[in-house]
Image (cartoon, rainbow, N blue to C red):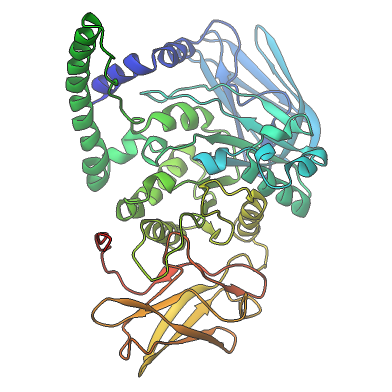
Length: 509
């Protein structure tokens, strides 16, 4: 498979492949990967790997604060050492010396977070709500941002392109907006420096962000992703040959050249170029805003997202670091009647991952979206809800960090009683009446339910059209009208009690 994928990149991404080939041939002399640089944030509270390349056999000394550590470059030139656990603070200087010397300035010690996903993570601060006001007051020397330049590769790389920037009105406009608001709240609440390593690419599915090695180890994902990709590459090569013949004929006859066939991004391509080069830089955890490009394949995503998390954790070698997921925002036209939803299924897969994977969390954004735009401008709410999850999961703060989560269902004649956890100070409806609940009987036809809150953690449903209810759904739509919250202002997690497969779309009457 890799031989064929290489052919694809040679055709479509030759310049990127050449650039990475040059990177892989480490030049003589002392060098560190791009993630080490002026203005960087080093992780507190754990051993900190420092690595790079030098002449084979060269002794390297790293000096930071009161620590001095040495390593010897191997035959391939690579060297690595670890600093002992660091206390937060700064700015400091980190010096690396061998036959040559490098000094990194304005270095802080604090917490480092990976910010990854597709376009909603890539979305920059200057394109969000109240951008100008936020940018003008963004000066914060204890918030730093490293943007990984977009790249793809067909094998894991050892370096990337990027640089650390201190947060101020000149630099913040191009920060990941979700990361900015996430990091700003953490920095304020914790009082320690925060470093954001932003590595995302709009329009990407989860497959390129997961290593080929990890996918090969799961038979279902290997068949659905890697084997399917191999078949697709083979078909592409056949289509390309036909196109070349058709294009040549069109040129001879003076006709328009037909559109050239293409391929989506290869599995593992972004892991190789935009994740692998960051490993094993010491981090606190990761935030992940992705899923739009996998809507419609949610059943497989139930396995893919946990697999990717395990893949990253295994390769980083730091154990089960916190991994926080943004649930898809509301989007597209609102429907009058309950119906199946590919986006709701994808949200369900995200919620299942957050519930089953240790130290995973979920930020619900069902109330910040835009029916006409897949990119909500309200990234502040998203980032701050992620920060709440981080404060609880990563830092052990005793706070309300999640909206209500469905816990149990009890049928009481023609009514249904639901209980919830993560209710905080209690359940509340934002608006005059509770909306977003639907019930179905054995016929699997859902109808809107009348809903009311009873007590602190209970919702009771009934529907005249469903005298014998068997299943409940809440906020089960691309763009649901729903308003169940806890009193702390966090929205309930969309859910369903059934596991019925999605029905094919019905033709318009």
